[in-house]
Image (cartoon, rainbow, N blue to C red):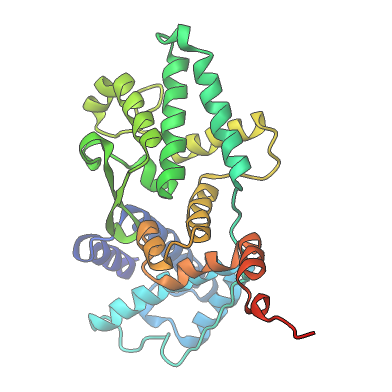
Length: 310
């Protein structure tokens, strides 16, 4: 455990990694430590050999490929640190090749009709409460609309949305500063007037609470709106629209990217908006829209220009 503590200290205070990353490292490394202690009676990680490491990889093979890769990456990062600091003589990851293939799963997206249904339902419910503006339910629906508009309008992650502070917005809600994965900062312009209006309406109703807490999106108790609350809110509107597709906050992000791509926006701009460190991650959206592909082939295929001489 001492080696794990030193590594986590390094990650927190020297590498300044996010709390989310630190939590994942801590969970994965405690699981690894428990496994080697239970199965090999080793109290010191420096005693772990390649053979024991291979057995651990076999042990975690029951998880999904993405989870396996994360758990291996956590352990590997720790051993690389221990080797660099000369706290171990031999790194068990040396001369081990690990290839874990993740199944190619295309992201789910909404079509324009489904998105329109969600927004129409939310705005209709708000209009029906114009005579009850003093009720908290009216404030809550105003907040819901602001959340939906910002998710759809910027493609930010739900974790990023819930962490937004009032000071992250530009003047008049003209832009938003987002802290993404690995504390990478990006700024997204907010141009659409409906998104701005939704944010302004929400801020007008919650300004006193926002000033106290400084987080922008708040719950009934005046605390930071949780990611789970956003998921449940979207599920509520989906059911009211009788949409069978499972729509989550991340589906909003996928839809944002896909619809921009269908409007012929350069993929590098989409990468920047989504905060992807690698364009390879963004390229998955090039495989999503079969409708756009069919439209291109129908209208722009060079065969259309060939005229047969009769």
